[in-house]
Every structure is written in C-alpha cells, then in structure tokens.
Image (cartoon, rainbow, N blue to C red; front, side):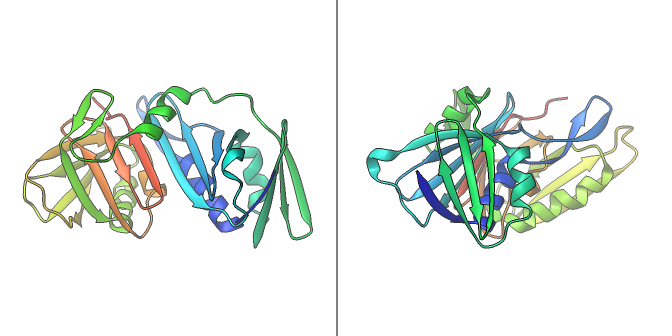
Length: 252
C-alpha cells in the first residue's frame, strides 16, 4: 500500500504526539516523551497518528494525497525514534509503503526502511480518545469536564514556555468564571520562585477552573483556535482543528 504526504505534515504529526520535552520526576524535571510508539490508522483520505501512556493519549490527523480505497483501511505501528532519524533529513513529498512487517519511507532519491511494531502498550487509553464525544457536556470516562475555554494555541504555548523557565515542568491553569483571560503559572520546588503569564479567552465561561499538569503541552499547540475542556483537578482535554489530547491532572 502506497500513500503520499508532505514531509512537513508527517513530521509535525509525529513530533506532536511524541511530545518530547520536560516532565516532572520526583524532585526534579527530566527530558522524556509520551512513548516511542506511533500507532497510525490509514483511512480513505486521511492518516491518523496516535500515541499514549498511562497518563495521556494524543491524536493528530493529516490529509493524504493518494487516498486509499474505503475497504483498505489499515493500522500500523512504528518506532518514532527510528523514524525521526530519517525524517529530519527529508524535504518535500514523502511516499510511504506499508508491508506486513516494514514501513518504507521514500523522499526524492532517498529511501529508508524501519520495522513495524506488533502492538502499542497504551491502546486502552488511545481507544478512549478515538471514541470521545466532543459535544457538551463533555465526559471523559465517567468524569464530566464542565469548563470550556477557547483561545489561540500559540498564546497558550507561549505562556507555558515562559513558565517552563522555572524548571519544575509543572504548570497550573487558573480561570475565574466570566473572566476574559486565564493564567498559566509554575512554582519552583522550594516555592521561592513563581512565574505566570495570562492568555486571552475567546469565550468567557461561567465555570471556574484550577488544574495542574506536567507535560510540554506547548509542543502540541499550533497557531489556531484551540479549546480546553476541564475542571478543578480533572483531566484536561485539549482540542485543535486536526488534533486532540487528553492528560490526567497532576495532583500534589
């Protein structure tokens, strides 16, 4: 099976679901990823990318140039770290060929082959994000997420990047009911330092929200309108035009 997708689209999707960056680890922070496995579902005119672990699940969808027939929908899993070695060197259009055991990547005169993986360890949580209903009231599992905030993804990412200077890789989102803005903040481990940055909320909401997380969510955001569904100490569901993410709250 052969499909074509731009290198930039493929790389953007893989990096977004990889979510490589700083995460909290006991009394420090360390560079990590969600997992090194990417589960792809090849649909009629779209390639869906999924990843996850015991705390979060992510999805990014990209259009493909060579649509596959409706009866040829296919799932395959590959190692992100192995794929990224080659993707970093590619520019232009990327041609993918999926066999029973390998993923072939061809760009211009260069070709790379990496083995497919048998399974993804987070398929349970991934299946939940595949089937989630975004119509309010949004419920994830059995938990209702009452607060809905819409904002520019880049503004939210910029707030996280600024607060990341503190170095703990833990972030708090504070939103007061009917406010035109929300605040991202972070404190040092000894609580002597604090950084915060506000971002504009497009749809002031009657529900307040305070929730913490530990993940480089700025790597998942793009310069478009995005939406968060959450609540006090509840999971965070982050939705964009072509992507969605759910992450468990960080509870001290």
